[in-house]
Length: 138
Image (cartoon, rainbow, N blue to C red; front, side, top):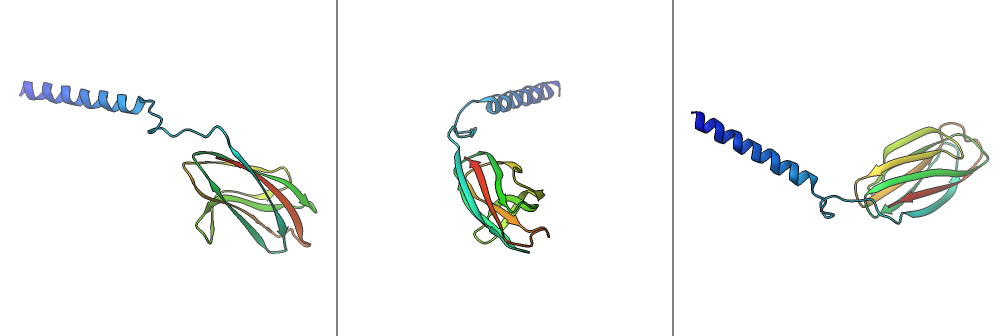
C-alpha cells in the first residue's frame, strides 16, 4: 500500500511539473501577441432623431480596440457602442449612453474578426447630428 501511494505522489508531481512547464513556454504560436502596427480608421455619418448608425470593420488580430468620438455638430449627448458584428447586428461589448465629443471606449479582442461601432440617439437629437469617429485596432 505504501508503494502505490508513493507512486501516485510521484505521478502527481510529474503532472504538476509538466503543466507548469507547458504554461510557461514562450512559443509564439501558442501565445498570441498584440500586433505592432495597429490600424487607424475614420468613420463619419449623420445621426437622425431616434436613429442609429452602425459602422462594421475588420480586426486582423488580438489586441486593444480604442474608439474615440472625435467630432459632433451640433454638440449633444449620444449613445456609443463597440461590439461584434454578425453581418446584420452589432452585439454590444462596451457601451456609453452619455457620449460627447472626446469620449473614448476601449476593449480587448481575442482574435481577428468582425467588429462594429454603433452610434445612436438616446433622446437628445432633435436635428441631424454630423459625427466623426476614429478607431485604432489590430
